[in-house]
Image (cartoon, rainbow, N blue to C red):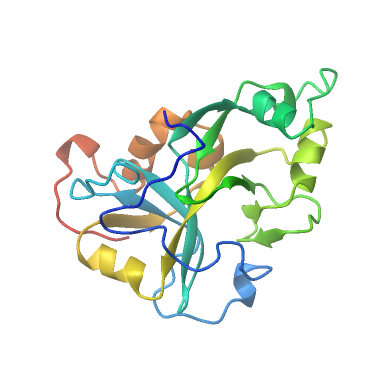
Length: 221
């Protein structure tokens, strides 16, 4: 568990990219890129010894020639959703009976813009700062999605993170070549339906790999 107010840089230096929120309105609007990891998980290899990214699963929301943006989905903070909503003056409606009144943990999304919320959710509504990754997942950074969550009208599936991870042009590709990450097509159920502590193992199983047998060798799917 990490404190949401602190950020650290990686020895492999993920998270040092351009402004994190400068993404296209949808992944389809981004220019074609020959090595596109949008809607993929990055799974940290044993060689990833960095205290921020070691042992993590990162969901990639945007990847093009200018860089990549994603959020860590398996590293919790010491904050829960109800506390977050109270802090931003959006106390949950007890009558809503949904995620808003839950003790669901807020995640540490990465060391970029740790003071800002990044919300992964099932596509729902038309929020002011929403990027539709695909038909199953969207990313929103505006407060309006949390306003709907607090009122019990938000997306059915949601994961809230503080901060994100960013890579500059060619940086992520270099880390993969250096055996920093495994990659696999993402499954939304891993993000939204499993407890945080089970997501790393579940992501590895998408590759057919037992985490106990993992070595530092590279691999992609």
